[in-house]
Length: 226
Image (cartoon, rainbow, N blue to C red; front, side):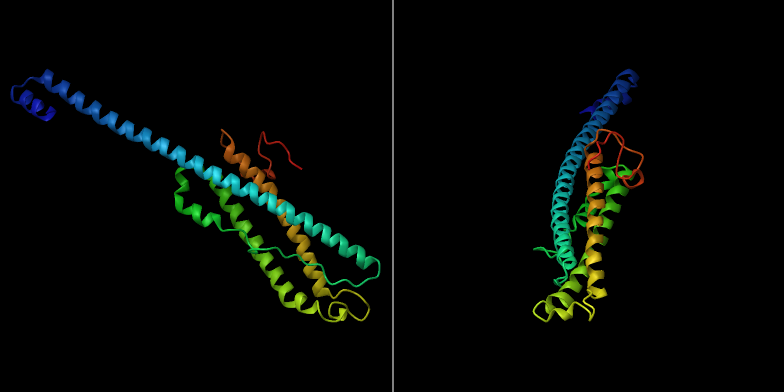
């Protein structure tokens, strides 16, 4: 209809009407594009909110799991050291938990969701680096568990000399494996602080120029959590 009026105005050289019709067309196109932009922005905001909620829940749950693991490991190691100091020869302390030995690979799923449209580059770097470290710590724990299953569990029903040398000292390979468990506790402590920082970053109403790692997991305005 508008095109017909424009054609008639052009034939009759009614430039005023033609200009008016052109303005109507341009304004209509602009409004249509703007509505699409607003709808896209609302859609992106909703998608970001859903992803942030999922990440915050995952990181908070991960923190709780790691705290529980650390508490059990530290108690077990302390009990073993006490028995060993009393002259007993307890089997090497080891830790195994139900389920998978590594955390679920959430990052691979998230990377398929065009996160570059939703987060600033520093936040993306922080998240990517965190999940890379989480995977690395998980692989270290798999190596620890492999030693436990291959070297410690088969010896539990054997004579205590399987684990101790002729001088009554715990053999170095078993002592080293327990030290790997102590390292795992430290890795968990570092990751829990990092997770806290990421939860704060994702929920903040501002962006930060520094990564969590560069500021020792303590972004500006973040309350220190012991």
